[in-house]
Amino acid sequence: MEHHMINTNTHIYASEKIRTIIDLGWGGFKDYIFPCLTSPEGICQVKGGLAYSNFLDLYIHYYIRAESGYGRRMKIIWIDQTLLTDWDINLQALETQAVKNLIKDRYTIQSINDILNRSFDGNIVPDSPMDCPLYVLTNQRAFFGAAGILDKGIISAFADNVGHDLFILPSSRHEVLLFPDLGDVAAGGLDGIVKEVNSSAVEPCDRLSDHVYYYDREMDEIRIGR
Image (cartoon, rainbow, N blue to C red; front, side):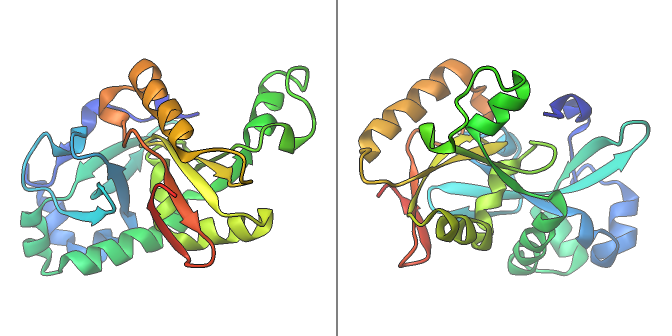
């Protein structure tokens, strides 16, 4: 985890006009724009006027990522509707570019067992990954990594690899958990787990929803619940 490298106090809004953002234009910033999944109650909506798209019952907001200094500290600049007008682009172009940029975040899917074994020098978790068939999808920084599900190529390739449809547990804005549907777990039970974890371990601003999502291999779609 590298959350400590992101100075959240430097998150600003493009409407607080940094002249350079407008002067360099869309061409100067399009490769540094990324999506962030958020709930309707998420912190991304504290200010009005942000550019957003819908994804199921969630929102996608967009931000410019600027990195500088020792340790590559990050500054986040949220994109609002006014900036789209200044750049003379539409929401579809913004969304397409942001999802295209996801690949730069080097998304990975790792089993919970592997992660815990590395953390505890292999002395805690059994070696067999199917003892706990739960996987974490996030990016290299574990920051706004839940947006990885916007690239269905990542999800479909993993589902094909394990040979099952997938439950998608919205752990937080920073990651999601993938659980192969082996036919022995009820979606309602997983909903209860998500709700409990949200209330006890996830900051309100990082919560997505209190229910699971589902990837159907045959339909090649993500939907709410099974």
